[in-house]
Image (cartoon, rainbow, N blue to C red):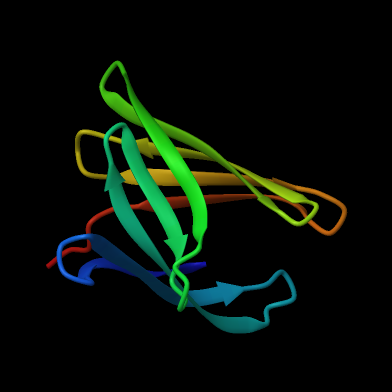
Length: 120
């Protein structure tokens, strides 16, 4: 998928809303428009990620540590029988990436997403 993502303030200064939109091109050539939103909240040792729904239910609590020049966060989420194991990696230059390894009876894939600031 290629597209754009942005963070905006939501619900006062407590939450950041993350919204992404883009176009996903399947191996068959079929093009799909995709969107997704989450809510982020700061924690003492990292941040939490919540589904952007009426309950703001928890997706992951990410504990962040410094590894040389990077900030690395790791978290898991159990969704019924499927498990999401995630790594968040933040670089000093402002780029970051998220890797979700998803395993279970209904899902078996790895999603890698790289983010960089859009040119103005």
